[in-house]
Image (cartoon, rainbow, N blue to C red; front, side, top):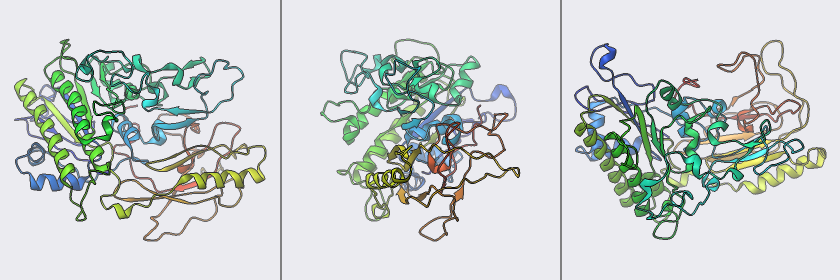
Length: 505
């Protein structure tokens, strides 16, 4: 992914890349600093998409923002590059290693499976699904709230998506024997946590009620969280995410919420709590159009096809609505606009993507492991295969202590198990997962240099006084399981996150 950002002069709305935004007022007087931040994610948009669009549409809102603001061209998504880890990175400044969120479908060794009642005897280890599947009713745009007049009446949806999450579908905390919410699964707080604690109002709009996670650890910090379910049935029958026109209608509901909030109202337009200090939304139109086979995304020349070009126009028009609303409300010189992207999209050149079916790989690894480890016959506890091939491993051997030198000590382990290649954004990513430390794989033009990661070094993670292995980390960043369990080692090429790790902690 490449992300975009702009900053305008004090004469109008301004925009920059990132969350820690300086005020737009001239001079250093704190009284002149901006009072509001509007964060917008155009999911799937590459830096090249922005550059081409601005060059071809000089009168567009994006072009005007780019001309008057700061344009940062070298942002990278965290790895894996996808909506959930991307959004969490934007709002926390943390990489998946810090936040514990590698994807919207993960595995937690320290939690109990959803629906567990007898927590005293239940075995730890649970899938954590942070998708549409945890809605009370996935088929409904309101997630199961029971509103009438849908879809156009969706503005009446609750501003607290916890109300439409099904507790029976959430993992269970063994300490309390109660379901754990998405926000409490997150290991850190968010920028909303900081702003809310300071007594300022916050708001956000996103595509699943599972985005309740943006509240951050420790309770509700987003005063108005509007999350219509994008994977519910649209008026055309299939999900909103399966049709280009339907997803534009879906995005418009969220854009209407932003206009209401700029006017000092809540997302529904029925209450008047004031303009949020930090608020925003994500656009799905570009991402959906890039992926749908019928739209074909890009042409052979790497330029957007007609459907994708129309979706870019749609997003530009909606941002234009926001700028006009800010000017009308007299907030143009008091608001910072951040335009970015949670992630890019699969290669602009389709031939650059090699799709790998992970099932034969997973089955082969587990079979070979079971042959020599009958006490732990299943090595791969959980696997995802979308933005990356990520494995959570179960290895019952004792974990070796850190060496006295402070470097990571390496356990004795069997021969390499398997290799796999994956690609998500325009830049190729290559990951080699091994159960043996062995020699480092050679570099080549086809295989970018790898880096060796280790979580048992004597150096403590940021914000912690003592070393501690994360029980939620997957194998592709060489992580250690919980006490009494060892690990399989791995090398992984990992893109940097969009911000410094854990800056808001």
